[in-house]
Amino acid sequence: MTEIQTLPTRPIEGQKPGTSGLRKKTAVFRQTPYLENYVQAIFEGIGGIEGQVLVVGGDGRYFNDRAIGVILRMAAAHGAARCIVGRGGLLSTPAASHLIRSRKADGGLILSASHNPGGPEADFGLKYNGPNGGPASESVTEKIFARTRDLQHYLIWSGEAPDISRLGTASLGAMEVEVIDPIGDYADLMARLFDFDAIRGLIAGGFRLRFDAMHAITGPYAQEILERRLGAPAGSVVNGTPLPDFGGGHPDPNPIWAHELMAAMHAPNAPDFGAASDGDGDRNMIVGRGCYVSPSDSLAVLADLAHLAPGYAQGLKGVARSMPTSCAVDRVAEAKGIACYETPTGWKFFGTLLDAGRATLCGEESAGTGSDHVREKDGLWAVLLWLNILAVTGKSVAALMADHWARYGRNYYSRHDYEEVDAAAATALIDDLRARLPELAGARFGALAVARADEFAYDDPVDGSHAAGQGLRVFFENGARVVFRLSGTGTAGATLRVYLESLETDPEKLHQDPQDALAEVIMAADAIAGIAARTGRAAPDVVT
Ligand code: G1P
Ligand code: ZN
Image 1 (cartoon, helix red, strand yellow):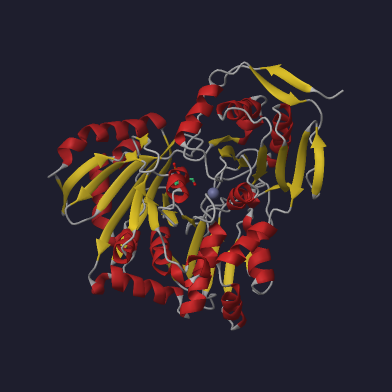
Image 2 (spheres, rainbow, N blue to C red):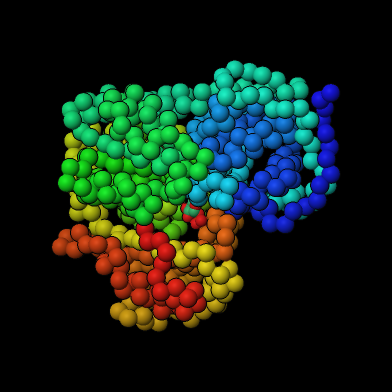
């Protein structure tokens, strides 16, 4: 006979949610009761789920299906009224956010490690989103973490979870499990925001596009929207079948990991427009023919021209960017006379601004762009906004970028990542630099003089919450900037991120290679933090 089981457990070390939920090696998550403990802590940390409606879905990576079975059985045991699940357990992160909002659910569990590789040897992740559809706030994740340290048991329904490969409703004890089409509602939302007729006309006129789904969740979404609804020829979406290990690849849409797309876009017969998304569909990369668009520049261009799309025709209430994101969008906001907020890294910090109607568009340098249509960043949304702008202006990506830089100047920008660095060495680098921040003002590094240096902290203007320790910043007198912070999403060692930026307004110097334009800032960053000496790395592992 099936029943609610109360199984004994003990706290497990290190179940602390990072920048975006809890991410660990798949092998760690698979070891019972690792997942069970964390789900129990979520349900307790948010104050119980009795009678609630939850959305459950993930990016389809290895272990997605079995983890969903456990989550459904635990939700039933905790008295949830209903779980809404994407067919096959699939939901892109933005589609999950939309579903929570459109169905007025109480929250959702999203299974993903985003752009990290998937598979038995790779990464897995789980995060809780609240009723606004956005990632849980810091105060909620702290409560969840506190519960992980104090668990004595977890509750689980003893029977099997229902088959989620077919649409329809089944029951699990007293709980209903509703399996829905993961794509239709999301595609309808996009059709409301953007001028699909204009984009269809552009494509019918011979405009060619290539969307690389990187064997991840956006494949079926992009096929439905770009090929079926907008008329792009079959095959415009490449690597469109989601695979549990993403084809062995690294589903992170940047020039390094999406090098196939970069090569296609720089080939002699390149398409007019290229784009890619990540494991769970919230990131985007935009590239024109022979013209890569950095995420920070993309945010600025979208902020400048979003009003050309029907969903944003009223203009923007304000914009927000994470602190390490370049300041390109700031000058657009200034020109438009709208507010520009600077938040810590991670989408969870945009939620209050979006909910309060203070910001319409948000973005991060890490290929995340989005708006108040959901409470997550949204890869396909950014692609469609770009296509809408291209259709209305009739200009190429390269021409739009040249126009933008000519008007606003160009914020040369790059991020250098040192991955899987010894954790103690990385922490020491940051701690020592933090201690030296007060003495840096006035110091010279090559041609650059430091104007000021600090550690970024944030006071949320809506809910008054305070976030400290959000990255070390060094500002130079010529307006250049370098930021140092440690990643909060890695699963092995530490990843040091160094964000480099410098503004160029001389019309003669707007078309350089960013690494050349930033050479002095790069040298100064190494001199300031002793990166090579402390990490033992002569060069970064990933340059974006
Ligand atoms: C990284 C990005 C950050 C993004 C997060 C989740 O976090 O830098 O902008 O919000 O992934 O996609 P990090 O590893 O730097 O903590
Ligand atoms: Zn992602």
